[in-house]
Amino acid sequence: MDQFDLLVVGSGPAGRRGAIQAAKLGKKVLVIEQGKRVGGVSVHTGTIPSKTLRETALNLSGWRERGFYGRAYRVKQEISAEDLRRRLLITLDHEVEVLEHQFARNRVQHIRGKASFVDPQTMQVVKDDGEVVTVSAASILLAVGTKPFRPDYIPFDSKTVLDSDELLEIAELPRSMVVIGAGVIGIEYATIFSALDTQVTLIDPKSTMLDFIDKEIVEDFIYQLRDRNMKLLLGQKAEKVVRENGKVELTLDNGRRIVTDMVLFAAGRMGATDTLNLDAAGLEADARGRLSVNPETFATKVPHIFAAGDVVGFPSLASTSMEQGRIAARVAVGAIAKEPPKYFPYGIYAVPEISTCGLTEEEVKERHIPYECGIARFRETSRGHIMGLDTGLLKMIFSLKTRRLLGVHIVGEGATELVHIGQAVLNLKGTVEYFVENTFNYPTLAEAYKIAGLDAWNRMGDIKSEI
Image (tube, rainbow, N blue to C red; front, side, top):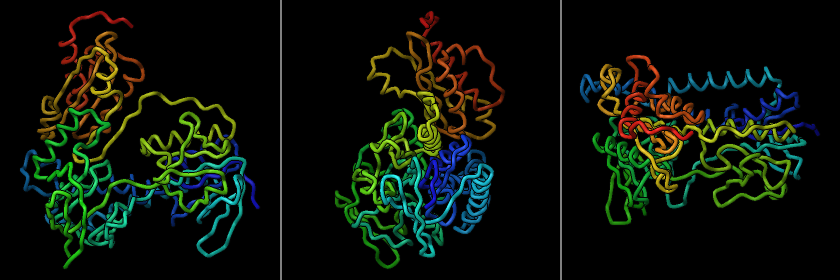
């Protein structure tokens, strides 16, 4: 039986960052990955594939140029599923190659197989060929990620009724699609296929969507979706889904019926913990397969076993998972781990993008903080005109008392890149004066920060800061 300092189960963002961090501290590390290649859900079915699909769809459809040339404009008239897959495979090969090189460079060992606990410090790994290997470690990091939630009443067939993993393997693009679930994954795929001119209907039993995002941003986002003829059936539940004659018929709880070419079920994900034999380690998962951890150290109730990434729940971002894995690994091997900055950016790669950092206007109101907002629309910038943008909104919230930035919220082209300017100012406790007094490259979309800063400054008046 091999002995390691740290055993990592899963090679997604949390697992690989944790493994490499421990290796850099001179520890003996083993990564166990059950997939055919390293990278986890993030590389093979989640973050990288969905963002690659989005970029390919926008490029081939000519989406970004339609502001100039009209809605009928296309770079490629007939776009096929193979067109989308070709770029995806190139991207995935590159990601795997980079990751394998990182493991080799840092002397991180890795094996393929399914891992399960034998006891709190020992795991057995069943390889594809049936060989069973037993390994033990002083500490264990569970970074197994999640898998799509698949309820029994949905007749999945991998062709016309699919989950988000299966969507990447479709043989042809549907003319119509129903997406069940208005969470981040459902919204991303719904808007990507809408950009490909698929008729998309989005269904969710909740009457609202993206409740953790600033309400004004969500309202602008919804307006853009409806403006391009996406149907949003919020507050309605799909009670029955039936496949028939190559089509799918859905019956909603209000009696409405919808016939469509394809259904994507994207209403939640489950922690991939069901095969780990958690009982043998003294652990248990919740109803959605997630593990509870100390939010500062990512330790479970068993002190030497840690968990990080999507398996511990919100925010379930690749970026935050990497930091969780790094912190967990440092704590696991006895190194000091500094707490990350309070505010991190949240990105939703829909069409258009949404990104946010800091407090929403609703949260500011709940805390009874006197505040003012500054708004800029991308069409107000010269860069926006050059790009043909009719939409796009940047909103900043400032404290009236300290004049500090409290939150930045963006919907529109490049939102996930632009947000980092606001993130830096927010974590460095900057004020509205930063945006008013600094020079931004011209012409850029980043100028929207100055426009929004001036908008807020004019509304706030020249009140002295109490910093």
